[in-house]
Image (cartoon, rainbow, N blue to C red; front, side):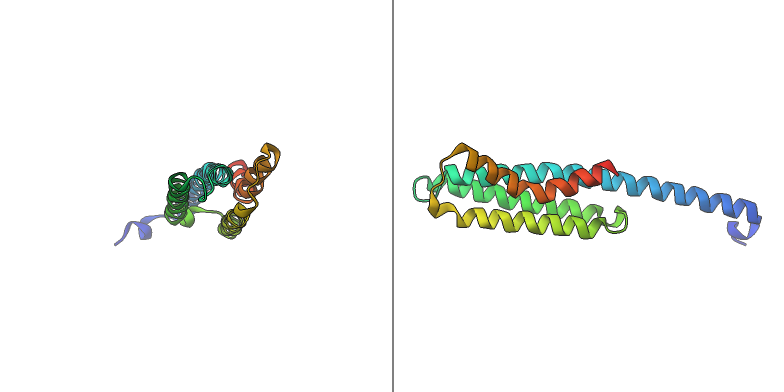
Length: 146
């Protein structure tokens, strides 16, 4: 006979409650961890979009290649973190993360489209950093706070 058959109904309910509490703790931990990853990656991608305007390929090809390489590493890190933690996210968090991640990538691509404009105003460059970082940053902060 299995151990489950030896438990009375009260013991079964207590075991179920304990399992549910353990799952809730794991979900909260996974959400916070992915939230911190999201915050860090969003700020890094925003900084790379900022630096991309300072080192355009016409003037600094080596800097441009390094920035694009770091962008690829950041995207891979975010993807691997999500792949590892998506099962421990609360309902709806995965969709919010995907939207934030997608919008951050789209805004980074838009910052690439701004390269021919040769923007040099620090205020505009700061705005680019904020706009590129914002979607994933907001999602990450929301995940950490829950």
